[in-house]
Image 1 (cartoon, helix red, strand yellow):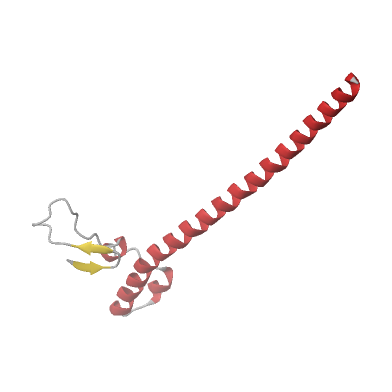
Image 2 (spheres, rainbow, N blue to C red; image 1 turned 60 degrees about the vertical axis):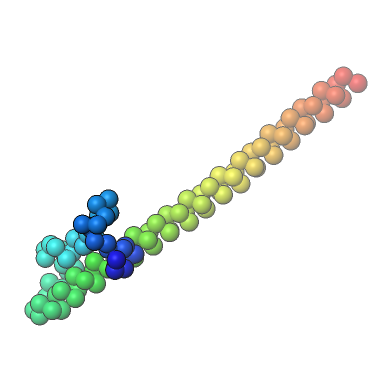
Length: 106
């Protein structure tokens, strides 16, 4: 097969279980053009803009995924810190209650 981007294109006649490479939507639909490219008269430049926008989508997707994972991890650790403070407060409260009961019994 031939490596295209992150996918491997293989002969579909030999491997029926492998789907062929699917081109990004910008290659098929000429209406998906960035707003900057609407003013470009040269068709080669417009095609280049479509190609750039089509290649920018996976990069933006990965960046958004990375930022979302990082934010989720930050929130998780914030929850752990809040839980630890609450558990410490609850443990101290129980300790003071036990100390009060022990002094009351004596």
